[in-house]
Length: 279
Image (cartoon, rainbow, N blue to C red):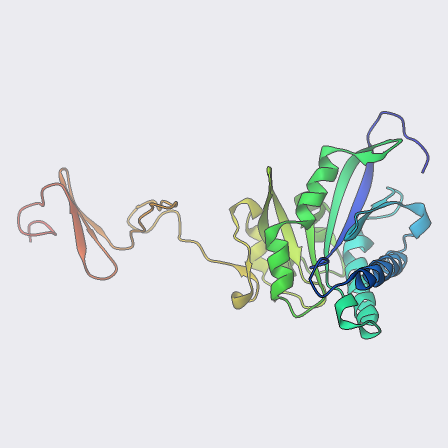
């Protein structure tokens, strides 16, 4: 890789990590077979997306690897073609490998600015990509999936690439908040070989306000209470929050709240005539 001096340059980052690489039943021999298979399947998936392995900068991470794709290669195939090709290659690897050498993968795609030096590459965006592939919502999505691959893309990749793809349905992605260590950023998760049901409503939801995908509801984020109900009561969230679903009656020093159970809670002195005031 030719040096780029002190200036940051743009690259698309493809980061792949093996689920449970250090599992007790995965001996050193199995780990070596897993790593050899990992490089093979990633190379196959990049080739399917039209990206030659030798054109990229790549570094090993023990239980995974990352690839920096030069800007002359379009990003769309990296989310349209590469994930399905990677899942297909993983299934092929697993059919010819012993159980402890079989793999399932987490995949992150991010568009980053990086600076090269004599030791490799660095940037805050590169660190963010590593946080994405380690995000708990992505790990949970893969653990709950019958497939072999879970993918997470950064918000910039989703907004600038996924939303505009011709052969990929963005409604099969789910918005999440990726929080790892000091990192907290919105992102989008998909299961390439076992997709979430298409849900156009998720495209209007901001990832920052979203919960992790709930497999029991087809991967949709858990519903949240409306901010304001018909009576104008604003919902409050938090560990000590109280959700009010009934009506509000009275005014001044006596305000009665009718709960959905039929019970009532009065703040201050109740107005004359009972909890609902004069009749």
